[in-house]
Image (cartoon, rainbow, N blue to C red):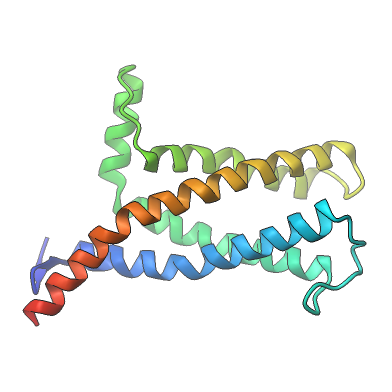
Length: 169
């Protein structure tokens, strides 16, 4: 891969994708926490406003940011596809060496599925939808914690690459 100032083009693209993904990640976490804490735990009615927005608007923002983040995650995974393929091969050979990144990736699938199934296949008052949303909330909390650890572990590497670039230019 072509290097510019000591940092490969792929590393720079990865840095920009990760930087871009921070905004939708934070927005999705914040909107999810508002929905969980205010409307699920405290039982506010749907038409009650939190920071001037009702539950439907918070949910719309949460879904929009989830879609934007999903696109960013697809790009991120594409940049790291060699690592993902190697991890999948190790699983297939029953010699899993799963990193935290793979746990995040594997946890993302049921988190997204529980939310999507509850949105598309059940009415708002259905008990099954409520159960799926509760499962989604728990998985999303765990996914958020693991994602923050994943981001924190790789932030030093990203900053190091950026510093190398700045020193050489």
